[in-house]
Length: 442
Image 1 (cartoon, rainbow, N blue to C red):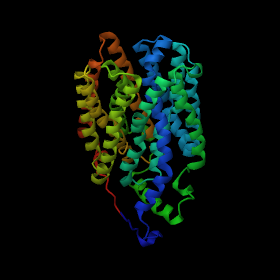
Image 2 (image 1 turned 135 degrees about the vertical axis):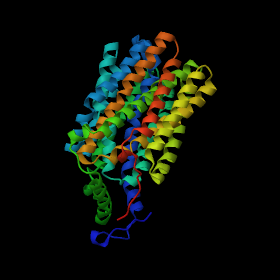
Image 3 (image 1 turned 30 degrees about the vertical axis):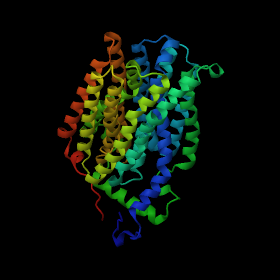
Image 4 (image 1 turned 90 degrees about the horizontal axis):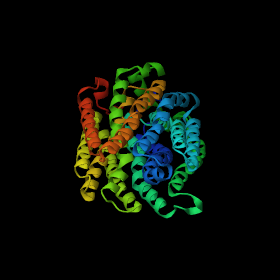
């Protein structure tokens, strides 16, 4: 698509907006994907480390679920402050700080010997990672006009699918073939593999990123002006709010609750899919790793398709609602087929397609009502409220399994919450969030 601008804007009318967006995308998105891959790889690791970690530390399912959720507690407590500091100090330096500190904390899991050390370090890892995902989402609003955000957000969240497609088999192979190497258990190698690359990536971020499009010397001045004009016009349409005003907006709080429901479903998949497959008789750790990749493959495919379709139609809430309803069906089917590996994996594929693809589509909604400092704090608050689902989901499923010997009742509860989420998306959003996102050339 070629977009022309008014002659009095002082811009080169022969520039193709799509060419500039492609240039920005190729500069930023590969590194962003790799960084977020390792953020999510850590969450895949903890699910694969579950059985040997429990055996070595003597953890019950409830204790494991509690420790896993403490990551989210640290994350939630520092999420909004972290994004406010990102807005103050600049994305490049702050994202690099996050990558380096959380990489070191993740690698330090190799030293855990007791249940309380496990609790403490999971909290620290969450605190160090706080602000990363919402910081990147805010960063994308500084570079991409709204008519391109569905695809770019989907590309960003491809990392979550890759962490399952690539990370899950790698985790299984590490557990199978590296356990005992140099005196370390397989789960210790998992955390080293997840943590140390983040330190290196943090240094690359310092060299590769710019704080805003105005600082991008790798773009020509006319290219910078073209995209800046688009972004400035969209900011003026939304209106500027302070960081604190954004935190009290009803639309922001409602989006936070909707994302809370989506994250209950997401953590239900991420933390328990390997355990469900293992319980159903999925075979060795390597086999379980490859089977666990299937829901994420489906999620990646759905993500790319829905990203393009939602950009073309502008109907963001309807797409998110359809996806979470698919996830609800997947959770119900997973509970029904918990003892049959083939049907269970099929149900997880539907579940993965719905829940994994719903997240990037959801994140096209907050920039419709937030810009500037308000976007930095508002996106962080939405993510914070959503991540509380990461506390509820692991503890609930773990407790139910300890009490009943089965995860099925908890899976049905999550399915019901997905249905509630879809109802809210279709009936409760304010007009600004229900409006279509269409590109409007000047």
